[in-house]
Image (cartoon, rainbow, N blue to C red; front, top):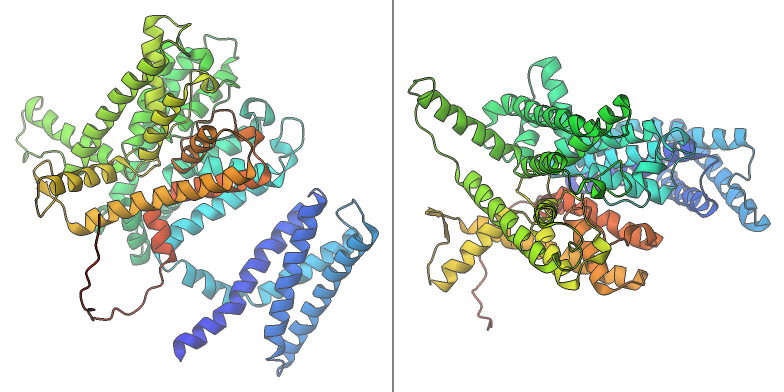
Amino acid sequence: MKGRDREAASNPARLVAVALALSVFSLLSEGFLPLPVGRGLDAGIALLLAAELVVMSRRCRRRQTLLRCLVLAACLGLFCCDLYLGLARGSTIYSRLPLKLVVLRNSYVLLAVFARLRRFTLFVRSFTAQPARTVMFSFMLAILTGTLVLMLPFTGSAGRGLGLIDSLFTATSAVCVTGLIVVDTASAFSVWGRLVLLLLIQAGGLGIMIMSFFVIFTVRRSLSLEDKLLIAYMLSESDMRSLGRSIRRIIVITLACEAAGALLLFAAFSRGPLPPAAAAFTSVFHAVSAFCNAGFSLFSDSLASFSGSVPVNMVICLLIITGGLSFVVLMDLGGYTGNRLARKVLKRNPPARSLALNTRVVLIGTFSLLLAGTILVYALEHRNSLLALSTGRQYLAAFFQSVTLRTAGFNTIDFSRLTTSTYLVMIVFMFIGGASGSTAGGVKINSLAVILAYIRSILRDRKQASLLHYGLDKEMVLRALLILFFGITAVSAGLFVLSLTEQAPLIYLAFETVSAFGTVGLSSGLTASLTQGGKCVIIVLMFIGRIGPLTMLAAAVRRRRRVQAEYPRGEILIG
């Protein structure tokens, strides 16, 4: 009974949570939202108020509850009056009621919501009890914040912010480090808008929770048990004793790589027509975007104008590869290099250490994919989109595209001229993605390696899958297969919906879908012409691809008591 009472008590809290979010957004956006969006927002708040009023009316025994019911009834009446006037008069202006009355109406809603703040706090705590839900909630909060900020006038180059869907799309693409754009980043945003994008990319690539806990650890010098469990979940770290040191290392590695990349890019960008200040900001923006595998560029043609610049290509490629290896691999490589340095150069004798299995798998997989991608892109495009380039620039462009398929999103060639076979090859590489725990997306190299090891064990009739002379648990194999199945399902569902909403060749739709799920950001030129429904599909795919299948499934699962029972074994014909 206690569980049912708690669940019933949480239902009003959920209504309060949604009403709070919508009310704050309605207050901030009053006066510049499109008419359909404004009416839909008012209708949603009115429905929530009606549901809350029904729930509260059953408890109208105390004076405080009765007063709350009257306040909510007054607010509901104002919302209904506003909607009725708009529909009856067919007004094309969003605000039908006087502005003071609208502000008073929304303020009443906020007061009513804050009157139930205790239940709302309990709801938030229950929602963030699981680490997976906390990660999802942090990304959602960052996306919503970025959406609201990008709608403000000062972020646009023309003194006007983006629309709701375009702001949501851009914020999601930045936080999920994807790089797909519906507006030209170089011309649509002011300096402040570009700075907002930079902060969103950094927060999404580094991890909102990691940045938050770094601040907490810096101030308090300690983490609570709940904080340690959450960080251990995000970093896939079993030893919680060194979490504080791991967080510091992640921050230092990120800032060091981005700073080094920015300095090298500044040496190249400062030679062009850009002023020193603009060249410095452009260098920092592209360094952060490359290391976080975001793919946002301040040039309208991405990096096509630098297709022959070896320094720019090499720096961007190195940042992309480093960011796609994952922080765990980078820290393991740092420890291994330091150990070798101490033994050979400094003549010390610390205990010898070797690279972890995960690090070796990621390095071998990364090298293999980069080499295969370079060869395939050159072979398929050297007589097509690369024909106008010299032989050296052709290989450089092929290598750059192979690197950027690791979910980076930059391009130095015209993707609208690629052949269908090249699109198919790129779709496979984008679907694989980078390493687990990195800023890259996709189903990850680690999962692919485990699946291939399992297939090899079946072909060789072995009971246990092995990889580099290490045995793999069945649970690990099942997780890898689950990730593959979830990825195929998400891409297939997204492609099906896009085929209904868009009028474009299927190969373009498939390329766009996989690019969004893999948080790659490459496009055949279709993104800017997507319908509102198509943009929403891409937004969902970008979010799913950045959060990851396992986090999504873990957040959706309700914890129940395990029942120690086994069912009779059944036989099903397979094959």
